Amino acid sequence: QNMFPLLGKIALYLADKIIVLKEGKILQQGSPDKIYNFPVNKYVASFFGKANFYETMISDEKYLLPFPINLNKLDTKRFDKVGICVRPTGFNIHAAGSISGILQNIYFLGPVQELRLCVLFREKIYDFIIHTNPSAIYNIGQEIKFDVLPEAVHYLRGEATTWD
Image (cartoon, one colour):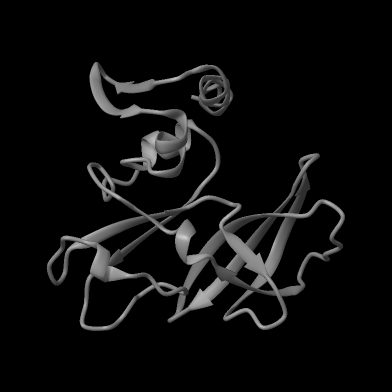
């Protein structure tokens, strides 16, 4: 399974159409950009690179995550579980950000710098993987404010709430 992200990147680069199989079952098929940006579940999303995964429940409250989600887009009913996927590029770091996280780790990956943040929201800790400019300077333990780009929030279907 460690080879999956590498194989997925090669497939995204070379293919016109991709079919993702698991245990002989077709999970998703389509163009590389559709599969990367709109995966049906956690398995498909993970196959093509890093992603942030969250699970929430439809409730009377607007959202139960550290960032707002548009529940009107979903065909769900109260108390349904919903899987959320946000790629590491789906964030905007800025001083007026509505989410505040503590920087746990920094990884230099060449064209991007990967930040690993922890966010405390409603007595629960959420982990975030955020890709940013490699020349930006951050320090472990630093508080970082950011927002999730609304267009980067993707709702998972299928096996979305069958977490490993």
